[in-house]
Image (tube, rainbow, N blue to C red; front, side, top):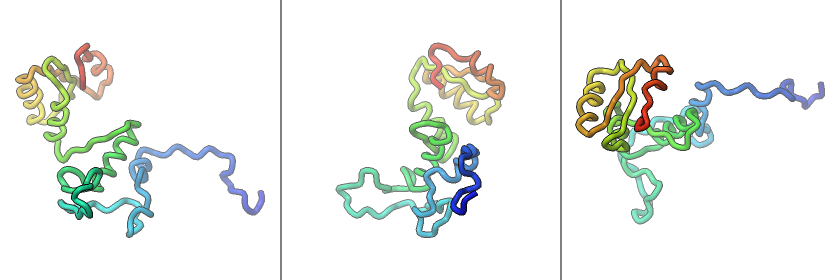
Length: 154
């Protein structure tokens, strides 16, 4: 083997594990002054804006978006092979996001082992908006397929 040849030359690189994808997707150490592999968690609630007339795509207020959340959303999208990813600060805010895209007459499938608060949301609040819920054991994927209806959205 020549002096400049790599011992792995000609081999297909092994696939990245789920954990490796999560750790490295859009997280280049060169992007951070600290050169950390995992970016720091941004705790700031407000951000400096150079020009108040040009704020599109900028961070303004931490509850709306911040660099840490943006990176997490990109990682969620990447590992799920999706165009976009969304993260929420709590389960209730995630449910609110889901209900925001549903309408009367829609059907959802939910795991039967939910905490009591989420169960009440599906049974009481969703029902009051005309949204039907079927609870199944989601650990058995065939149960999910069997619960799908023409009006199933989630």
